[in-house]
Image (cartoon, rainbow, N blue to C red; front, side, top):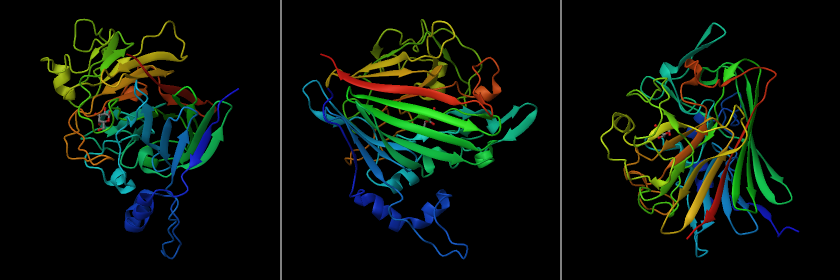
Length: 390
Ligand code: GLA
């Protein structure tokens, strides 16, 4: 027998989202293709088209998700004494997600290609493609209007011991320069065991690169509670993909042993972060893809990362079917952004563990392929499990 579970769609649809709709309608229209615009340019705004959903499990853990960017805005989990805190960075107003300084992609689903593609160029079957370029000379996280900046359709879903939200979006052929109409479904599934599972599914009508990931920034002490440098991180990764100065992989896959990139045994994120090292200098800290250890060629769920925060006792484990994980430790945060509770998000005030194919895969034939072909399915999952330890 399972305890009671509920999935609450917030009826009040947070005031902030309504305020946003009124104040930034112009912006909204610019961002969102599917907003309602009559042929004569009369604007008809759906005030409720941006919504916030709360998933709640039987032990009181909640996850809030908005259909703008499929963004996770909050994850409330207990510490070792049962005290709940919000462990992801984010904003209180949807327009802040839209206008964010330096675009941190808090909590969003990024795509069509999460991470960088060198010069925004690649070719498939002899055909050259040119993507929108939005990170110096490179393409990052799907381009100027990536999946983090569109409105998704939603449906509440439910199982015996979980509650969830499915978000769907149809990315059009040539959107941000990508080939093919891409039909995407992302399911957020919150189980009664304090596990948040993200299931991705996509199909296309032309061969295209696809690399979807979740871009939450975690601070297991609670959002806005200082840096994450004392969090202890274990990565199941004996190798990583070093980068050049514009954060594009060089193609090498050296072992981490004997370098600051060795997290194979848990160590604090801050322990080696100041070590003199060219890779750390390029990333301004850790901003690198790690190759997840796998036995054989299978793509089943494996433990990719475990993070422990000593003062609260909170633990997060990341399991995934993906071959890589980008460990980014909030190097671009500088205290200018104020979070949900009004506290500044300081440098290294959150870390991301973005499960993914390796950056720039479309141009690096020695990396696992990220090309989805018509008739095939892009199907992958990642889970974030929360618990506590002494
Ligand atoms: C990713 C990238 C970082 C940075 C953040 C967003 O994690 O690897 O370099 O662009 O997104 O700020």
